[in-house]
Amino acid sequence: MRLRIILRYIGYVLLFNALFMLISAGVSFFEGDSALLPLLFTSLITALIGVFPIIYVPATENIHNDEGLFIVVAGWLLSSLIGALPYIMWGGPFTFTNAWFESVSGFTTTGSSILNNIEAIPAGLLLWRSTTHFIGGIGIIVFMLAVVPSTGQAAMVLYRNEISSLAVENFRYRTQKTLQIILIVYFGLIVLETISLLILGMSFFDAITHSFATVATGGFSPKDTSVAFFNNPAIEMVIMVFMILSGIHFALIFLAITGRMDLLWKSSIVRYYIGALLVSVLLVTINLHGNVYANWLDALRFGAFQVISLGTSTGFATTDSNIWPGFSKLILIFFSLQCACAGSTSGGIKVDRIILTLKSIVKHLKIMFHPKGVFAFRLNKTIIDNSIVEAGVVYVVLYLLVVFTSSLVLTFIGVDIMSAFSGSVAAMGNVGPGFGMVSSLSNFSQIPEMGKWILSVVMLLGRLEIFALLMFLCRRALR
Image 1 (cartoon, helix red, strand yellow):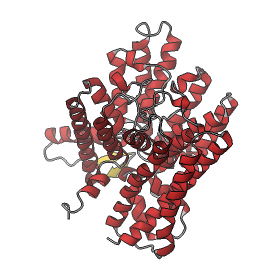
Image 2 (cartoon, one colour; image 1 turned 60 degrees about the horizontal axis):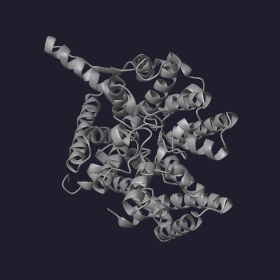
Image 3 (spheres, one colour; image 1 turned 135 degrees about the vertical axis):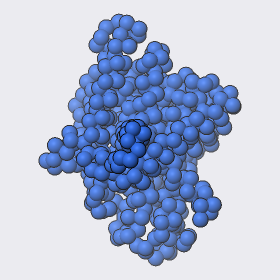
Image 4 (cartoon, one colour; image 1 turned 180 degrees about the horizontal axis):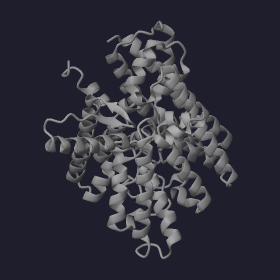
């Protein structure tokens, strides 16, 4: 690997972080809050470190796959580390471990927090916290590729290491066109949601931070009680709509906007995704009525929001789902594992892989009945290569193994089983809240320090879809 080329591209990543930190510092300056110096100092240091390799290393469009992998993984790790520095310098509840956890949670769009009093944090620091969602939502490297000119062949290598393999298959556009589509849809959804929330009475700061968190399916809110703070059904409805949209493959949204709405409804993945949410909202509403809420409207309002929030890996809350019956909790745990579609900002196993796994089971049963039969995998009337199906099933098994291992280690260090399991599910799926002491209106502050480091690694594994980080760590052994 050529270290100088890697450093050049990582330099771009650091400059992007520095720019957004500077914007947050500007908010601190106008608000006159105590986060100005931490944000400004970190921005300047990050910019200086990032600019040197860009100046002194010649540009190249030819990078190898292992270099691309290193740039992607190192970009995420360094962004998380740099992103923690403003928290550490500001102090308060931010020990190094807490700052690292909050930063990783932000960039991976997990939305788990260690903060007990979010509203006491300065506005500039809260904006930086939400901006990590904005950057991480479509991917740090995707942001860089979309803005940096003349990356050529390098763009394709980096893009394929950054984006989910399922999403790459589904976009079916050239790399630069795909990047444009992602940005158009991403920014378009943020702008539309921000305007909608402003119309409903939110301040601009609250509207933009909640839009960042919604479209990135992240979940960081500048309010201690999340969306429950507003107690406004209209605001909840708008956020639900944009959570659902943000969980759909961005290429399908783009096609729908440009006049091919029929392709959206013909997608078996989208039909399953929407259908599963609707059926689960109905079941949870029935289960909550009489057990938690006295009337049907409240059961529907709070049940729908929590199902959609976790089913898209966003993690906002309008109620304490920790007091819900076991049936409703299990449905939320299922959606925390599955989440939404590939090609969106959602985390989790993804609807696409769930469908491929179910089709794999059906095919296996057919072969048992007809040993000499030949059966093809079809998705949206397109034949799917066996290697893609196999990779999907392997990913599901490995995903569940990570969740189990993480839960096991957390229980070993003293975390109760519900908090350990649901916290691991939430971290791996980049969902945010779990149950027990990490429930929807609680946080991760009570998790032991070692547990926070474990969950940070799990968040990164989930965001990089396991294989990229494993290949990065085991690249010598795999040669």
